[in-house]
Length: 409
Image (cartoon, rainbow, N blue to C red):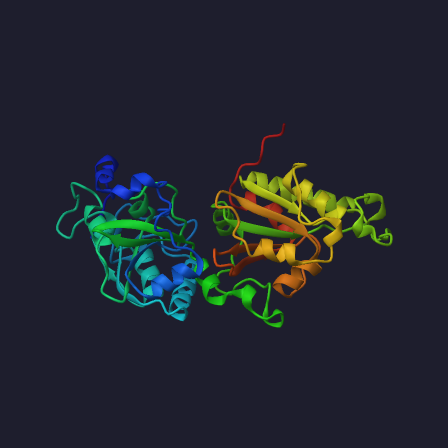
């Protein structure tokens, strides 16, 4: 079946929005009904919600044919291997959490159907998720029927899964886009749909694993086997914000020695300093971050001068907040508390510290000098690790992704 683009009547769709939408920020959960952390998981276990997913990560460097045929996946952009793994991870976590799934519908595209099957175990193709009705190729009010479905409770004791494209969310809710694989959770109240939560694709695994609640001996800071990614997909992920990048400080001059109690003083003359190579390496990471257009909402360093200097070079600024004062340098609780706290939605948190403290919180393997970890924490405090990268890998990522270099100033 050929498929052509829709001319979306956004102003008409807006008339279908619930009255509660005007009292909240578009595209974000209604403060009156918002669910977070364990409260969200407990609510989903009882059923009664609709989970509107955007399909998981698409393949890169693949174009759709001029004429898209729904029964021919070769004419479409498929899920990337990462997308299959993301959806599989979410499905496994949802089942592990005991969240019951009933009805599952998806846009007829192969990438949405595959995402739905991984998450729910089954899926029914329905053009309503594209903003069409079953008997019309261009419905007068796009997504009207989808809005009605989301405003209707699912079968008792179950949750409904809908997998579509970003437009299924933005044309009915507005506000910030859904990340690939992200879901918007709705509750039907008085025949109106109310947005109660937004859940990233990796958050399901973080909820199920609750890594920071494991005994220390069972923790690992290795990337999640299904969710790990790097290169261009990683850039796209972290640019959405809400992630933490923990960096071990760069290498030091081996000829230098710390003076006794040097960690308890702000005098950098008593501490080992970064080597010239490490300084250049940190500066290159900062240029890579800027080229990727990452918004560094927080820049934090442990009290050592080498961590502080690394942070300044990476962040290309002097605006660095110390994680803890010299009097608590041996206390890892500030780092543990910070890593268990979600990063700001609007940007990326960068923390620079030592390997020992990170290892004590997150587990082995030990970080190499300059190595970094990309980390995501949920509102319940569970976390998932998406990548571990040597310093040199950051520097080549922007060019590989086709990002233009920064203008020299």
